[in-house]
Image (cartoon, rainbow, N blue to C red):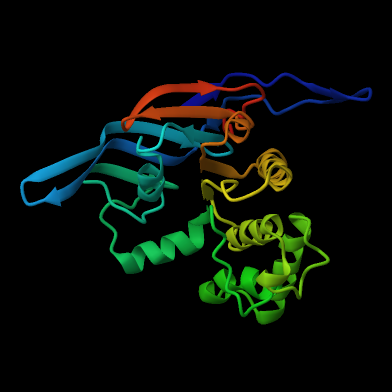
Length: 266
């Protein structure tokens, strides 16, 4: 959506006034994720199809924090995997950062996921033989766009960001569940993804660790403008987002903005 603003009023800060140049200014409300008429069917047998998602469309703007909730079997995880190109819809189209991914092959999707999407799962999937810095470094090593020093420096910076500055050399078996999940979040941020996708990221954590993860997601969204979509059964987590989508039988039953929502970058 594009909006023209005809005039820009002067801005005042501590007695100083800044006058903007006159003339129209183009504002762009960017879309980071778009799903159009998504249908997902599973072939249970030669003659039997199960419809997981019948027909679903929505968009996520840059800077939004969206939670997706619904009962078990409502299609939440299937929808998330379709968003990230880990599953393909039977019908319909998906765009990430303006690029249609629906018909991309696996090699192309591997590149897109590495460059544009960060995944966080219920189970962290850290590599047990590597320490925290090395685990966070993996996506950057695969990407190959930074030097070894740049990779290590960024990995440590990300661990600092998630509150793990004193755990650089710890291996997963030397970390608590909450600490392992924070390392997994740092790893998901390694290549500066346009979109962060979470599949029950607090589902395997105690309440204190889950609370730390809530706060981390909020801070990433608020301070960095990170676009986030999280599938969750956790009511507390769902209500910390700026927008909540509730699914029932693969259909959007409700889609509402919550208090303090970011409406996207304009």
